[in-house]
Image (tube, rainbow, N blue to C red; front, side):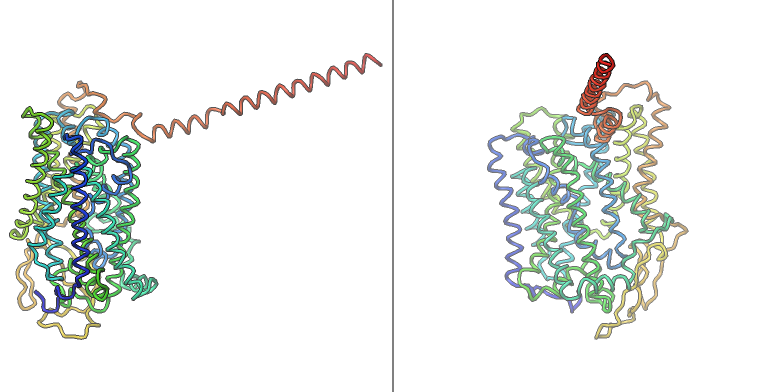
Length: 611
């Protein structure tokens, strides 16, 4: 550990008080809903809130479920190292919510299901459901270990807090309110925690604005190449361009929003489909606000350290410590504010882990237990709570596994990229293609799995070409100390390699396992898996008689389900039909004109008779 790291002595008692208060409020929400939930003790109440929730809290919970402490720390670092082009993600998120509202939400909300994988059995068969359930559980557990361990490690090396004490305490609090309060507790703690996360970022932004000035931050970022929004390179090998984010990022968000169990379980807890749709679109605003704050925090980070990069200078051990380091650097004279940021980071952990606990409890109960065992609703409720408790302990254990397995992060990336896009393709086939059958679905899943596995492993085993990743320059020229050893970079980062390809660095020499493989952007991994699943699924379904099968209309998207259909009908009616009032008004005017003409003719005839 670096000697220059700011230790726990820099923290004031007020910082500890803010952090503990965040934990206490989160636990209190769980206790409150555990108390009022005793009136109607059933699994529907526990897992879906009995479909009684309104749009606003669900929208913030939808946002919290896709945010995590990893994102809170890593997005500013992404901007610091690669530029603010990642901000285009908010447009992908918006498009994803439109597709979710139009295609997936109407189908899932109509069906009496708790787990999204129940749909796969209704649409295909039980084998498909169980296979996808197994893949999803493995992927989610791997994510839980990283979500808990990675931010705890980053803050441990900056603040000196005991790593495992913090992990266990936060894990216990999260498990407690999930086990006691169920879905309603998870949603309302998400609302509280989103507020804490946003407040933590804003306190960093306001302090940097006070120290640097808004114009200065933008000017420094422009000079440093961080405002790289005008990158429209079509090269699919480039890590981040407008097109990789617009295409790959949008599809990734549709996967996360449309068919993810954590998202579906939340908008299915709304009291009506209208509330669910409103929640989906409000989440666009809350997510954009959060992402904008995180991106601007990255610009603040660069503006503050543009002449003395703490990472290159050896002040921090790895890049994810940069934002906590900045917080301890600029806010240590303001008791309570560093604690607010630390509470924000762990709020991200709590919100994500609570989503995982609630999701896995629902999936395990609905997909593995209820189909095989006949139990009363009270017994199922007790099992749900026991599952939540057990899964919480398992998540904390996965954090321990993450600390022991250096390749767990890579394994999670492979499992997530490999399984996520084929599963999404399976849902798209089921909802949009009436001829898709179980044979085509399984073949599509297998080929999509293989395709995304191939590109993921190829990326991890290949050399990361700096021309494709394009890390931006960092400097230590303004540092007032000498960096020990031979690693004294002043203008640019060393080429970034992954743990599969980088050997030990000795005497400034790096030995690489190079391969003749050029990997596409990681954002295209999901596109490759999804397209392969759909194409193979369509071909095999048609070949195996899919056109002859009959599918229940409730399992398919119907045009009447979509808002666009009703909007089109309304516009068509307005254009082709005159309003009834206007027609009546026109008729009255015509009658009045006709009466006047008749009177004039009569007067003319009378005058002629007199003459």
